[in-house]
Length: 136
Image (tube, rainbow, N blue to C red; front, side, top):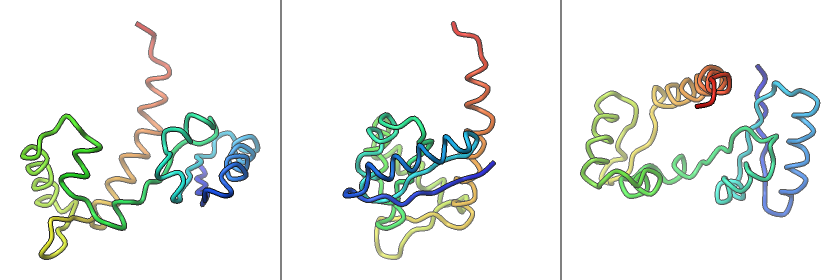
């Protein structure tokens, strides 16, 4: 499986989406991921707009770190204390590491590897299995 990462920006987003469509047309099995500030803020709209885009790499946590509050915006069903326990478990397992004297965390090498592996499993096994499952 081939993976293509395309850097995007707001002024060139239309060209970037056309490039993603061209890559997908030339090689349909290629996994196309976009990254950049425009697609970070408009991730769902970008994926809905262009079926050639398989994923959007949102890098805001890599820059500013994970916080309890930021994670609860992504996972609203968790309370502050529940998310605190999740973060503690991730820290104890070596997936994330706390930035000294702050309430921010970052992914460790193990965490990045686990995340990449989980995304690959989802793409190669889970989603194709769901596509083949009979409708209810």
